[in-house]
Image (tube, rainbow, N blue to C red; front, side):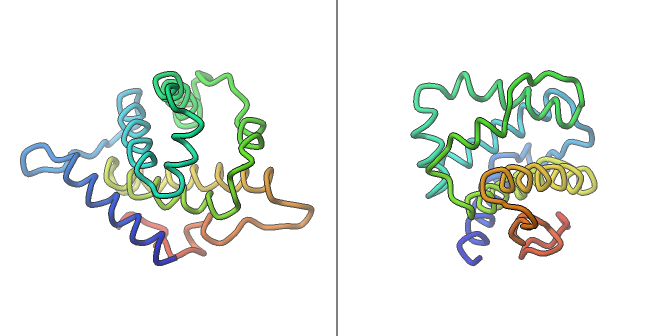
Length: 167
């Protein structure tokens, strides 16, 4: 958990430096196409620097980032705006990732949570994080679960070292 916490702090500091406009941090008060685009690009910028996830994503997406990021924008638009923009199948796509281990979903959230907290007002950030946690739990269950199993605690705000709130 200390490694997760240090990664989260690193990304939070990087985001604060990158997201400043003058002396004021800009936070989105609503989810729209622009906010989703910034969230996706910021998040994957951080993922590319992550010591483990960066290796996985960069190996899979080398030369394909320009194709992948719009797909992720469409995915999050479908999830957050409920506009049907995404036509893919995330579970089969993630099941193909044989190099992914159970703890990678918690690592993914350890990057995602601080990105969202820095980009959105607290109440909205908490809602987006809750959605991301449900997605991570669902993908984890599809890949590693069995009848009666529960996702690991780091995939749920209330049970992980994450405070469950941006503030």
